[in-house]
Amino acid sequence: MRRLNLSELEIRIGDQRVAVRRPDAGASTAAPVAAPAAVPAAAPPPSGTPVTSPLAGTYYGSPRPGAEPFVRVGVQVAIGDPIGLVEAMKVFNEITTDHAGEVVAIVVENGDTISAGQSLIIVDTGAGS
Image 1: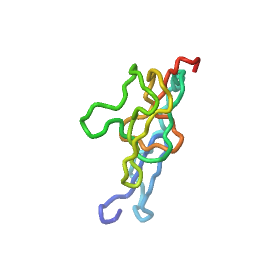
Image 2: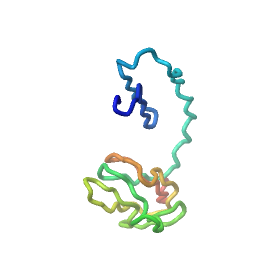
Image 3: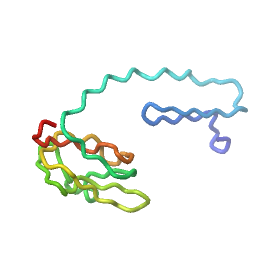
Image 4: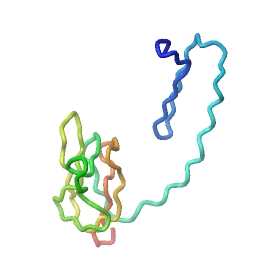
């Protein structure tokens, strides 16, 4: 921080915040940090059957940058259809659906860091999901 002549550094990821201040920075002249804005209530998830990731990593919705996505809301998917890629330890793993039906929601975005078991898409299987 000294080398860059910084007296404080704040990093925010989602609703998490980490602030670091140099102890020798002297009297603080920085404006006080405002309280985080109220987070609007999340909309209820669409009804259907979630398709989850079997592993943690970075989610990609298309086979390469600029390519058409594997799935879109409103398309029909069959068991075994690819729905995305998860990069884990520099290996791209194709994720396939284990449910057939209409995609009613894609709950992750391209480039999101995901965890094992996290929902990727929601499928209406037509079976009273």
